[in-house]
Image (cartoon, rainbow, N blue to C red; front, side, top):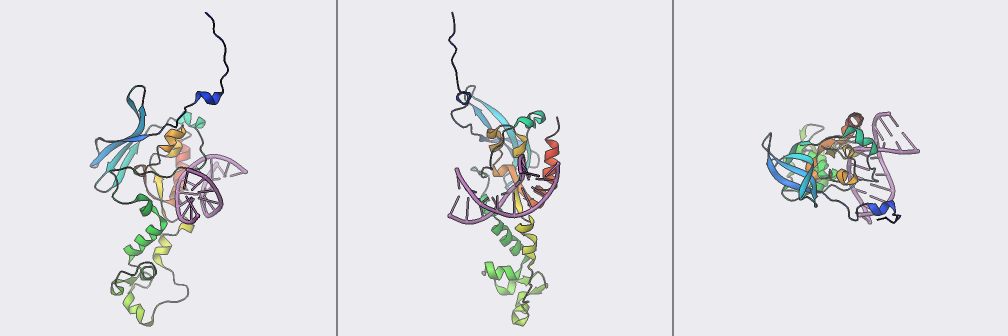
Length: 221
DNA sequence: GCACTGTGAA
DNA sequence: TTCACAGTGC
């Protein structure tokens, strides 16, 4: 018996189709009144499921309580590096609102404006609140009083615009719980882009101290 | 300069 | 989906 050597391109040895993850929902309960969901991969050959990230989700509050995954520290040095990042995905059964909408900076400003009762922004953005109910967050006066003739002119600074100010990274970003950077393959990294694997986090912190913290974690061997 | 955290528009 | 863009830290 003998074998005939044959050349192959290295690329021919890869997968013909991209591997995609799925969420195995409601696999049990977890602390804080949450339900467990597992992001992972079906293994076609065995019928098994490779668990990547465990997500404890509170369906009443529609928020994630914690996530859990294994960081294979020494392997991170050899991880795939993908250009750009994918969009965040939703999935059925978790949220009653559009997560893309609520994370939009315009929505955050609108919400902060409403929470503060900030008259100036409400008048510009959303006039269905009765003027009599508005108050001015800078001058601490009912807006009806300002309407007479005391509306400030010139450098009017609005409080909501100071709190939600994207130019200073003052907005709530989709902060990864189990982060992209903790995984080796692109398929695993992409599997982290679910809304249930993110929580609102100030971008200034996300892109600052927290990022440095994460990078130190990834250097642990 | 590069890697990484993100964004919004078309 | 693709593209251009903002900001931080090494």
